[in-house]
Amino acid sequence: MSRDIYSELLSIARNIVDPYLRALTYARIGYYMCQAKHPKYKDAFSSALRAIASIESAPLMVNALLEVGTLLSGINPQSASRVFESAHEAISEMPQPLKDDFLQRLVKKLVQVNLIEKAFEYSLELENEVKRNDSLILVLNSYVNEGNLRNAHRVVEYIQNEPWRSLALFSILKEHLKRGELGTALGLLSQFRSDYWLGEAVKSVAVYLKKSDNLDSAVYEKVFQFMASLSSDVSNDVLKSFLVGLAVQGEIKFVSESLKRIPREQWDEIISAIVSSIIDRGELVTEFLDSLPEDAKILAVGYVLDILLERPPSSEYLELVRKIGSFASSERIKVKAVRYLSKLHDYEGAWNLASSISDPHLRSLAFGSIAIEKLKEGDIDGAIDAALEVKDPRWGSWLLSEILAKIAELQASGQVVEDIEERAEKQKRLWADE
Image (tube, rainbow, N blue to C red; front, side, top):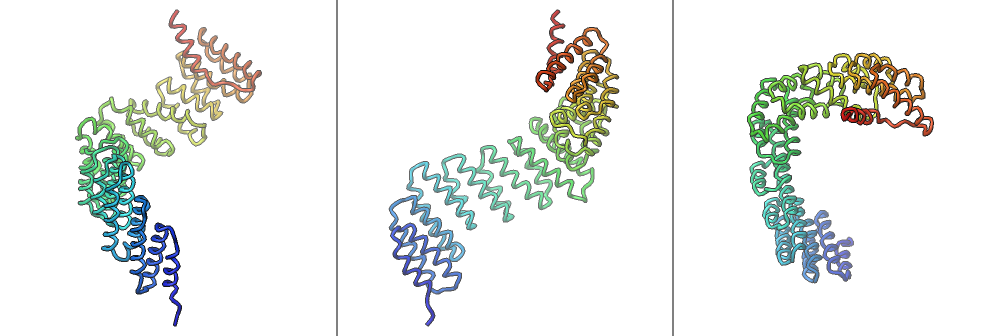
């Protein structure tokens, strides 16, 4: 007669003094007995439940019930439900905040074993706002994952706090897009109250439009009109996120054309967001700048240069900055371009561009940038030559004074502080007070 290892294991398990550990051991053995089709696996679970009944600590008892219920769920769902119900009854007797802690654990276990309706029911009993909303999101995502959007919409009605409500709407919106239900997805946008999740939702719409090869610009236009029709406090953010999403997807032409139909006072924020989103893709930046009307282009190139100047210089942007310098009509933009070209040591390009600046103050900033970079390379003569290119008596003298002091600073400390612009602004204010 073959040896019955499982029965021996159950017999040995009786010697475990701690009822919590004994219960878990019985349940785990029973689980594997069921997998091995051993006829007495139910006895193991019965022993586990008897051990649980002798646990004096309520938290330990509930933990044991949760673990046993989880192991039972794949074997006998009805028995598992009864075990989870026992856990719920015990949790209901606990004081706060312990009650909410264990109730949330119960919800997570129920979601794990796909008892979603019970998880939903118990989530609503949570008093702690964060735990309740986190649990409802967990339930909602389970419904979404199984494609049950009707129940997902039902859950979202019980989520009133942000950012959870917008997060819930975002999960539902993505599923509608996955099904090709663009109209339904768009209808959800007006319900978002979190700027972040609204932005993510609109970007998802933009990605969907880009990936849908059968859609043409007419569909983009309908979506644009829909978003523009939303209330003003919503439409501004929605349009910005939509255009950013399309720009990232490479739909530059539509984005540029759409800007012309947006109030001028919104351009700064939208253009800044677009530039920030595509700055690492030089070809899109170039296409975007080329497609803009002159007044929008001035804003865009300013944002491009501001971002680049905050980063370590990269030769990847050399041609782009040269191009910006060549068409820029604003001398302030030219100063920024000179600064970047100087940092890339394109002194010829920087010098030629700086020479086209007529305003004495701005010219001093441009040649000051060249001088500073030359100083950092140890080219003292080149720095002085750059300073002498400002012929205005006041600003020329000021720049020469600064560069001579910078040379002394370099000799003393071995480095040069880049504060020409700050010092120029200070000097400008001093002269204005005369």
